[in-house]
Image 1: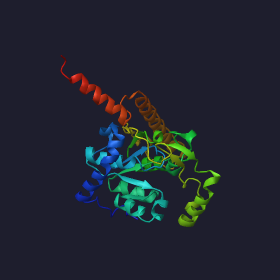
Image 2: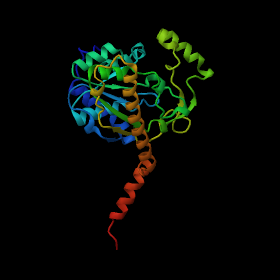
Image 3: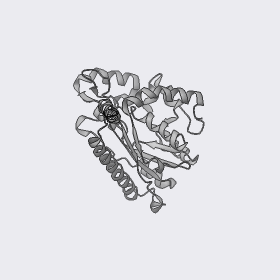
Length: 287
């Protein structure tokens, strides 16, 4: 597992190769980013946002775009279960993810680094259809307590688009997935017994699991200054105020992005191709 202090950014060659490997996904999703100027170019900060279903389809785009536009590599707090999966744990280590413990987070912030946090965690990544885009942060105070304790700002952000790529077929709690849950317990031990580890079964294009071509939308909001709560890290009521303020900001960002998505004439590749064709026709000389 990657050490909070010992990790070094990937070499330039690996970064270029990974970015090139992402190009087909960028073409498929044509992502739109807003507000990246709110992400600090230096100094510690928590970037707090929503997890989308499956949890990994939009995250690489976020990390690479922040690096491209702001010149920083953000680190990620992740569930320990990621390191139980051979191969995948190597990807997590190379990407600089760390086990999401308060101790690891403090170590990163002490080094002046920025951390991406998804307070909803696996509960949002395995969400049921009726919970689409609902933040599941109830009882989660860790990120807010950490921000108050260290005095670092919180940058709220939202991601929209992944949920529309899939239609759930089997909820992660479905009885039909009992064999998969048993396998999860065998592979992941105690972690596999949790009800938020198993992913739902979904279909994308037709009956296949290939994601439907939907544009992805991202927005980063103005940083939330946590200094008014300085010295109150042990006060649950004060920490809950910071969490609720952040949740309100993220929810507002998500609502705005969903409105943008609904009104976007270039939301899908087919629509974008139709617009380009229409523009090309308009530029043709008239006789």
